[in-house]
Structures are given as structure tokens and as C-alpha cells.
Amino acid sequence: MKLYNTLSKRVEEFIPNEEGKVKMYTCGPTVYNYAHIGNLRTYIFEDVLQKGLEYLGYDVKRVMNITDVGHLTSDADTGNDKMLEGAKREGKDVMEIANFYTEEFLDDMRSLNIKVPEIIVKATDCIPTYIEMIQKMIDEGYAYLSNGNVYFDISKAKDYYKLSGKNPDDLKIGVRDSVEEDVAKRNPADFVLWFTVSKFENQILKWDSPWGVGYPGWHIECSGISYKTLGEYLDIHCGGVDNIFPHHSNEIAQSEAFLGHKWCNYWCHGAHLNDKSGKMSKSSGEFLRLALLEEKGYSPLDYRYFCLNSHYRNSLVFSYESLDIAKKALAKLRNKVMALDSSMDVEEEKMRPYIKKFKESFENDINTSMMITVLYDVLKAEDINDTTKLAIVKDFDKVLSLDLCAVQEKEINDSFEEEILAKIEERKQAKADKDFKKADTIRDELLSKGVRLIDSREGTTYELI
Ligand code: AMP
Ligand code: ZN
Image (cartoon, rainbow, N blue to C red; front, side, top):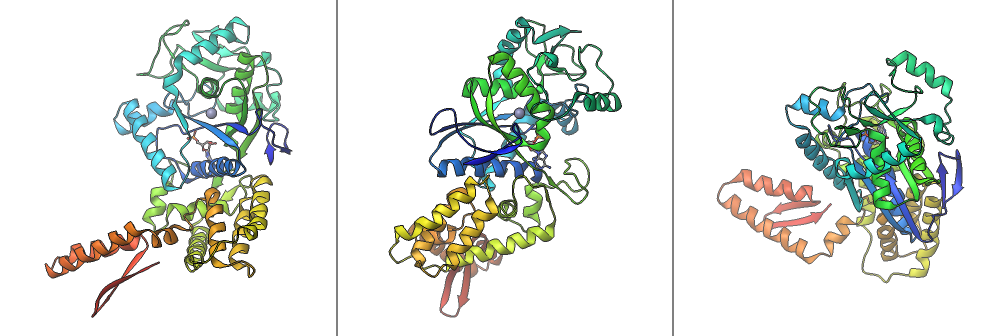
């Protein structure tokens, strides 16, 4: 398996710490609003990475955090708390906001066939871990207390800029230009581990700590959750490219200061999805979220297919024209799969070369568009029978998760057939009762499940679409 590692800036052979096992950490959402489809692109890439590794036979333990406290709108420590902003905007309390948007996020994940990580941890559930880590960093001289807050001293970190490749002078200019400098810091790039002096009025979530009542900085959350759930060594850490600096750079600095050794070997970052204006935004213009795409007639899996057609390290521009192309291509693909005859014998040895090519495409730094090309090769192949093709498609779909065989599966599923026949009967009765609205609703409901009703003088039959 070859993966591009942001740490070394090259494609590297992937070797986990423990043979056959992968510990994977993926930064999760800040639950102050819905996820936009850019965020979802990153989660789709992480899902393919996890499933692809599992396809290769690795046992993957994946963790994701839910940031429900302390994510600032600006990466400098002077921004506003996104959670508080969300609560203010909607007149709710912070926990209501967090719970609501966490559920919405998980719904989006499920609609996109993203496997919900085995372990999801809320930032507010790990306060004692952050306190333990911060205390050790203070004791060992990596962190200091100033003006009521605890800061990480980046000059003590081993090669603080190794992940981002930035240089301190660029950053000084950035800090001077964009935000007022925090005079409590020893170095401009130092960051807060624990706030006791809140910049926010009505700071609701607060905990007692050795340094006073306060709350954790954003970055310590991921280091703490990873340490608590995955231990001292991590194989892969993922996120979008915007996370490289400062978030992931700070995670490395504090985790390695606390642990006293290298922490994570592979850092994988997904490039952004942008709209035509150049940036995906949750506040200005049309908020591009999954529900909006659905309103416009696209299914979540049309969007997943759209994402899989490009490489995760290339930035991608969203347009409805491109999504249209993806939607049509996916429908065609499903039709081809549906037309396959499932009554023949599977010739397993004929599956092997295609599976090998599919694996190689994944192993080549997650080349999803090549994986899809292999899928098309299977459907076009003349040397394998339909049922073997179907078996291969089903196998590939463990990673692609595009429900490519859903209709085929429905076809062989007796209980689904019973459900359709019962609905047809119910609709017949509704028509007899002159309840045409109900009859139409039943027809549309079945259509949305891929079943088209055909009315004739002899009665109603159906076809799977
Ligand atoms: P957030 O909820 O802002 O913390 O972001 C959640 C995830 O989405 C993080 O991994 C970000 O790096 C990623 N992300 C943010 N904006 C985009 C974008 N436009 N395209 C792809 N991923 C993004
Ligand atoms: Zn994180």
C-alpha cells in the first residue's frame, strides 16, 4: 500500500506499527451547523481509505472526534467560539446545538454510505485526559501559564514546522496583519491549551482545572481523544488540507511533547472541494449541503460517485453540471449491473485478475477513478459470465459503497417482493375508495425504492428500475 504522507511530502510504502492492524484517527466536525458538501468530500475520502484497508485485510480501528466545545472561528486564539455563535444564532443552548448537528452529521454520513467510525468521542467527554496531558507538559517545560491561560511553547517542540513546511517569518507577517497579537504569548505561534480567561461572554461549558475554571483549546481535543482511545502510537491521521496548519501541527507538537516520542507515522490530507467562487462557505450564498442536493433531485450517492471520480489530493470544483454527469453515469452503471443474469455459476478464478487490478489501484495512493475504471472493465469484459461479473461488482462495492447491486439484491429478496405486492393491493383499495392521493403516494413511494408500477386492464404489475 502506497500513501502520500504530508509529513515526508512523498508517496511512501504504508507499514503499520502492528502487523495487520491500523490505528486511524480522523478529525470530526465542529457541530455548530450542518456539514457542507466540502466537509463531506473529506469524510468520503477517509471512508474509502478505511474500507480499502479493510479490503486488503487490515483490521482498522478508527476514531473520530465531535468538537462540541472551543473551536474558534479564527485559527489565531482571538476568534469567536463557533459553538457559541451557533447557539446565539438559533436561540438555543450549546448542548442542544451540539446534539442536533451531531445527529444531522451522522445522518449525512449514513446517506453517503460512509461507515460511521467504530469510536466517536465528544470533546466534552475527555476533559480529565486533557488536564492530565497539559499538567505533564507544564511540568516538563513545554507549556506555561500566562495571564490565566495555559499556552504551548512552540520553541520547545521538535521541529514545529515539519508537517506544514511553513517558515516562522511568513507566520509572523500573517499574525501581524490579521489579528491583534496576544501579548501573553512567548512566541506569536504559541497556542492555548487551556483557557481560564474566556474572551466570550456567557461561556457556558466550563470545568474545574488546576489552573482555574475554564475550557480546553481546540487542538488538545484531538490529541487527547486519540491518546485515550488509541494509545501512544497512531498509524494514520486524516483531515482536510486546511487542518495541516495550525491544527495538525499543534497536535503533533503537544502529543509528542506529552508522549516523549514520535506519535503518528502517516498524515493524509484530502484536498478541498470549492464552489465556483473559490471557497466553500457555510455562511455566504447558497449553503451547499447534502439536503440541498437532494432537494434538487440528486441522491447522496450521486455525490459520492462525483467525488470518487477525482483523486482525493486534487482540489475539485463543484458544479451542478458535473454532478449531472455523475448522476447519469451512476444510473447507467446501475442499469448495466441490473441487466446482469444472476443465475449462472460464479467462476472464482476469473475474478482474480480484476480484483488484483482493483486492489492495485487502491494501493496506488487511493486511486479511486482507476478503481471505477476497473469496474467498467469488468462490465465490458467478454471472457467472464454475468454472474461472475455480478460477484465482482458486489465485491468492489464493499469499498466504493455506491449500492451498485441494490436492485439486484432486491430482486432476489422475497420479503421485498411481498412488500411490493402488499403495496399494490393497498393502492388498488385506495383507488376503489377513490382516494387517488393515497394511490399516487404509494406509487411514488415505490418509485423512490426503484420500483415502477405498470397499470393495465389486466391489473398492476411492476418493474425494477
Ligand atoms: P470542520 O467541521 O470545519 O472542522 O471541518 C470538518 C472536516 O472538513 C475537516 O477535516 C476539514 O479539513 C474538512 N474541510 C473543510 N472545508 C473543506 C472543503 N472545502 N473541502 C473538503 N474538506 C473540507
Ligand atoms: Zn482534529
